[in-house]
Amino acid sequence: MSLTLSEFERIALPTLSTYATIECLSPAFDEHWRERGHIDQAIELLAQWARLRVFAQFDVDIVRLEGRTPVLVVTVEATNDDDATVVLYGHMDKQPPLGDWSEGLAPYEPVRRGDRLYARGVADDGYSTFAALLALESLEKGEQPHSRCVVLIEASEESGSPDLDAYLDVLSERLGHVELMICLDSGALTYDRLWVTSSLRGLASVDVTVEVLTRGQHSGSASGIVPSSFRILRQLLDRLEDAETGVVLVPELHGEIPEAAHHAAQEIALEFGESLHFGLPVVENLALMGSDVTERILNQTWRPTLSIVGMAGLPPPEIAGNVLRPSTTASLSFRLPPNVNAARAQRALEDLLTRDVPEGALVSVRGHSADGWSSPVVAEWLVTALEQSSQKYFGRGFSYTGEGGTIPFLASLARRYPNVQFVATGVLGPDSNAHGVDEMLDLPTTIAVTNAVSSIVAAFAHRKDAQ
Image (cartoon, rainbow, N blue to C red; front, top):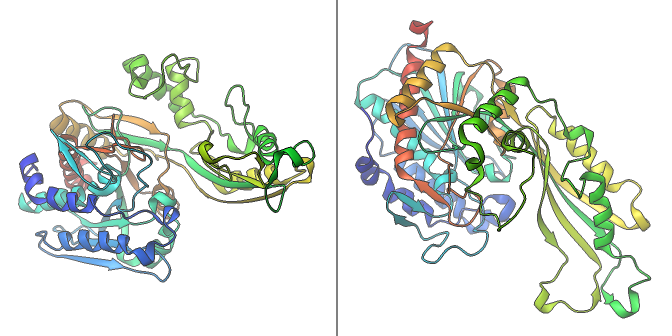
């Protein structure tokens, strides 16, 4: 049986809309998340909905470790005699609203316009609980055999999944013999087919603070005597990035680009051309980085990049006085190639920022890192399943694409289960605006992805017959 939009509207959309109203920010963005209780509220809501599902044998559990965000674990027992486990992953923590949303839209007030639902967290990644369980439920409704499945929904992904490995340790026996992992937190270049992620970049985040004074001083008295903290920060950044080209200068942050990645980038560039980047809301006449579309794809998926995502110590212009400020802090976000060791990259950055500091200023750094991921060789049965499910539910064959973001769960699972087959997919396509204003969930794509996942899980149950 296949899920329909009307069924999703009846079964899942009301609860998903309620989830959209909850300000369950990831711990990195809300240090008081425990006291506020929004994460607990959201996970209890999802667990309550999960308990209403209909399976022959299943269990819904909220697992909590001291000092860590909780995880939702739904175990659906096998209806065949297979001893393998399929893990279906998603997360329920959210990014902040990030600015003013468009007229009529708000981050915690879900609005439906046609077949699109607007609210923070609905696409990244609130839909995943509903998609995973409805995919499995449709198999049992259709009396299709399936292997043992564990749906794992975490609550720290947007903070780099700092709690995940601890839970994977605790849940190792419950997860069992994992042979297939389906991640529902990835993206799509278009909504016309099933897109499967072939690689994800890693992440190294550093907050660097430059201090020159213990308190601010009138600029007429101190400037020209005390060096500007911003100028020193600027010099330190020049150690990390070429200001003219945006090329990252730290060797430890670069990795060799596989030939297959070059080929895949060329294929996507050939199909989409310049239209691939038309959806970016750039200002008029802005020159994009990279000499052509292929180079931009590789920049986004296999080369390191720096984004300065936050600043502190600078008052807004309307209240800025003529003061030489005591300090400047910049939040640096480096995306790393999939094959770069993130911890090693982090150490190299911290060394460059703190060694031989100009003018003897006081520099402090703190940060975290997460490894990237590259897909192992895909089994023939899975390639067939991906193609058939995409043809059936989208109307055309599936495609691979590299992603510029980071999903630490995939790297963690790859280390623990090196022989596992991976399917990383999702609904984050054009205009979905994950992490930005006006986040949107495309409902027809959600239905198609859900049905495709159901088809893939069914194919896994018959994988030995296909070999």
